[in-house]
Picture 1 (cartoon, rainbow, N blue to C red):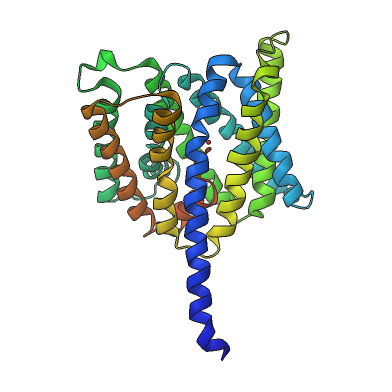
Picture 2: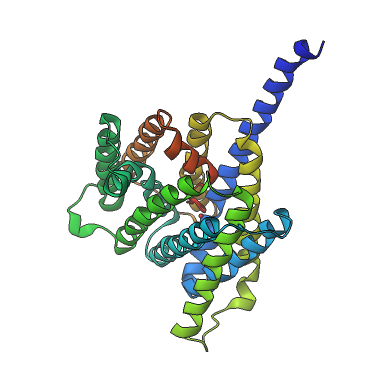
Amino acid sequence: MNNVNQPSSNRRKSFFAYGYLLLTSILWGSGFIPQKIGADNLSPFAFNGLRYLLAGFTIFCLARFRLPSSKEGRRITILSGSVLFIAAMIQQVGMKYTTIGNASFITTIYVALVPFLSFLLFRKKINRNSYIAAFLAIIGLYLLSTSGKSLDKMSIGDAIVFLGSAFWALHIIIVGKASAKTDPIQFSSGQFLVCGLINLVCWGFSDPQATGNLSGNWLIILYSGIIVIAGGFTLQAVAQKHAEASKAAIILGLEAVFGSLSGILFLHESFSGIQVLGAVLIFASVLIAVQEDSESAEPAQGQIIESTNAVGEKSPI
């Protein structure tokens, strides 16, 4: 009797898992709104420091107040948090000078960059699909940022966000390595805390007297830290147990689409026809790169454990 009911139970778990992943991508996409507001009103160090500390403490509670205990686990957690600090800082600075729609799609280019960084760092072979994905991503970036005009029309914000995507790609690789060495909940809590603390230290050194409009923006900090980063990670961690890696990566890639829709609905942003084509090409590059990752366990595993972006944050986030 149990064997008869098991397939139905598995289908139900898969259904909810993909639903959770879709909700995760919606949350991460919506997270670009507080990022844009924060970029316009707060120091990037203050905004990132507070939201990542909130996320870190929230997940620290879920990890039963434990962090990676092994020497190797602590090292890779600190390394990951440091790279996360760089990626998030660059993205946050860039968002001050570009739109949510552009930032969300340009950030996802990190997926196409992962194979090339893996080659540089570990001499991992680059397959044909990776070159196709990179080509589409470059053309898409050009069309999205310049509307088909000369390169000198590229927004400085788009260029900065694109630079940040390289560090998001590096972060994904590190997370992929960490996934086999540490507990994912403890690791994520640790890297978020490291990222938050580095941001607050930099904030103190850069301008300790400047607090920005913290009192008027605490709601977006809470939403970004607790709902988008911590909440999105928790949903992802739960869903990951019952979802195929390649399908999960595609659903999480919709973060860029939901980010763009958020900018259109709430901040009245718009795309030209050529920019839409650029966004489509970038998303196509993500789909091709994800398909490539599905043939190799390590990159796919790294991508599923930590988005983007993504976090938020994978986005990237």
